[in-house]
Length: 270
Length: 117
Ligand SMILES: Nc1ncnc2c1ncn2[C@@H]1O[C@H](COP(=O)(O)OP(=O)(O)OP(=O)(O)O)[C@@H](O)[C@H]1O
Ligand SMILES: [Mg+2]
Image 1 (cartoon, rainbow over the protein chains, first blue to last red):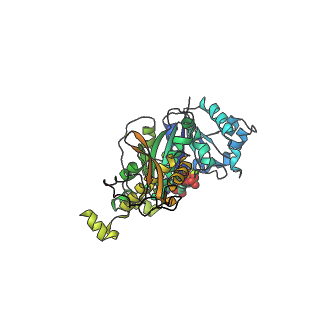
Image 2 (cartoon, helix red, strand yellow; image 1 turned 90 degrees about the vertical axis):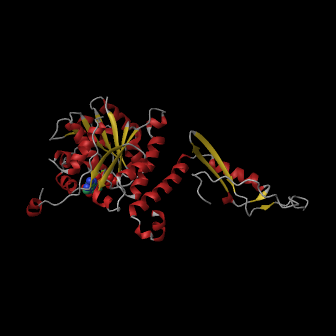
């Protein structure tokens, strides 16, 4: 029976899709059968970040409306057999993801996977609520910056009151803080909220700290989740976070500021 | 000392520290209003009607909050009466022939979740 994990944030552009791709890929690398679902109806970016944009035939809405079978819409990752991508549709009708339809699809997926990773749209409207509603666990993607922290707090409140678990008085949704785009250098200069600051303000357990890193942009350019690329600071941090997500103890190591290596400067690549 | 320096030279303080303080204050406020039961505005209005029968107060002088002190949930009602006028009684005589006695106790400091008026 799969565990449903939602990546959510309130604020847009903080790294939800990047993190959903990396965490799903990281779980698959650990041998967990994982599907990553795009809930960002209308925008659809997960397919690009995962590098399967040209293989999308059917999508989430087609399956909900009964126009396609689940196995026709799921895209099997070419790099890892445990990983599947479930793309969303580009329809402009945001209400197309009806809650009962989503529930039916999730129920079917639950039997076939260990983890269902949901990439939420930004905001606190219907789309974001649909994405978090069925979650067992939530990763609150947060940048060390005032508006992102405030929006994370809102989303934590919504998880505690509007999720399926909250509405049915079940065990509350597990929440985890994932701090992304972190710059140790700027924290040291007092220009950026530190890990300790954000932890203290939101008071939820810390899953990981992902450094601001060029490797993220490079990975998305090529459609590769960062954890599939060898030895890069963001990928390492995501793998640590995934280890913690499955219950391993890992020391929190903060990536040191990136220096352009001579090699990279000369040849323009990693 | 640090505080004094921060006060004298605000720009000296690092911006992350300022961000943290601002977030703490705004979130403390947003969290209580988020958890507030739906009936609070109606309760506030009814209380205001009742109190207004005895003294003239402005809407913003009565505040209703739900908060926590340790494990207990509290419904806190604050009525500010400094500057409020006693209502004249029907037959024209003042409600209070003499000015009301000065309070014999210091008012309790406001609970932390009550925003300063
Ligand atoms: N650790 C990082 N270092 C550098 N850039 C990053 C990092 N994480 C994310 N980014 C960049 O930030 C941008 C937004 O990331 P992403 O699309 O994952 O955010 P999102 O939260 O899914 O956005 P939206 O709310 O629009 O769905 C992208 O350009 C991405 O490459
Ligand atoms: Mg996204």
